[in-house]
Image (cartoon, rainbow, N blue to C red; front, side, top):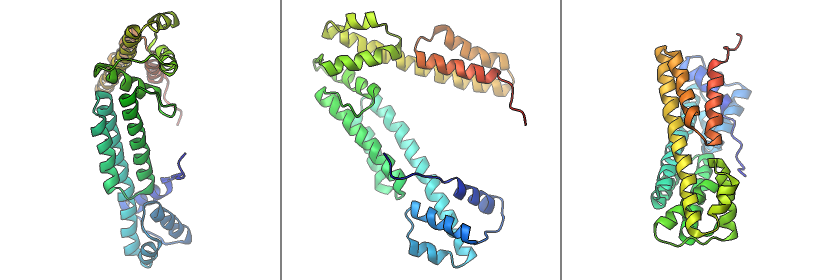
Amino acid sequence: MSDWQMDWDPIWALARRVLEQGKPLELTDETRALLLRSTREVAISDEDAESALRSQSTAMTLLQEVRRRIHDGSSRLNRARIRAYELRDAGDLNGAQQLMRDVLAVEVVPFYREQAEIALEKLTGVAEVRATGQINPDLNDRPQLTALYQRVQQGHALELTDDVRALLRRMAPTAAVSEAETEESLKSPDGAEALMGMILSRLRDGQKRLTRALFRMTSLRDSGDLEGARQQMRDVLAVEIVPQYRRMAEEVLRGFDSPPPQS
C-alpha cells in the first residue's frame, strides 16, 4: 500500500484563486504551511521553498511550479498507463514496460514515481506469466488470462494446473459463461483454450461496444437528441451479456433519466 496519501485539493484551490482569478497571494501562516507541505510532495527542497517564501513574487513562482509539477506528472502518468495497457493487451509487453521506464526517467514527484513503479512491477509480473505459464496470486485475473492466451497463441501448450483452472473458473462468470459450460471446457486443454478465447472476446467486445455507445450518447445529448441518446444504452442492453457492462449501461441509463439535483 502506498505511503503517499495525496490531498492536493487545497493547493489547487489556492492556485485557482491566485493564478487564474488574479486574487492576491497572502502569505499567512496557513498559506506558508500549505506551500511548504506541497513543495515537499513535488520534490522541491525545504531550502528552496523557504527562500521562495520570502517575497510574494517568488512565492507566486513557487506556486506556479508546484501546480505545473502536479499537472504535468498526472498527465504524463495517465497517458503512459493508458497506452501501456493497450500495448499489454495487444501482446507488446516490452513496449508497455518501456513506457513506464520512460516516465521514471523524467518524473520527480514521488507519488507519480511510485505509481509508475507499481505499474512497471505489474507489467513485469504479467510478462513472467506469459513466459512461464505460472499464475501470480498478486496480479489481477484479466491481464493474466490475456497473457496465458497470448502464450498459447505463441505455440506453447497450455498446462491445466489447479491455478489455471481456478483462474478460468473465476473469470468465466465475468463473461457470462455458465458453470456447466466452464466445467465441460476444463476437461481438456483444447477446451480450456477455447474458453479463454471466448472469455476475452466477450470482455473485449463488450468494452468496445459500451465505449462507442457512450461516445455516441454524449454527442446526441449535446446536440439535443435526448431520445436518441437514451437509445444508445438500450441498444447495448439488447445484446450485451457481460454482467459488468450490463450494469454500467443500466446505471448510465438510470442516471440519464434521473431528475436533476435540487439547487
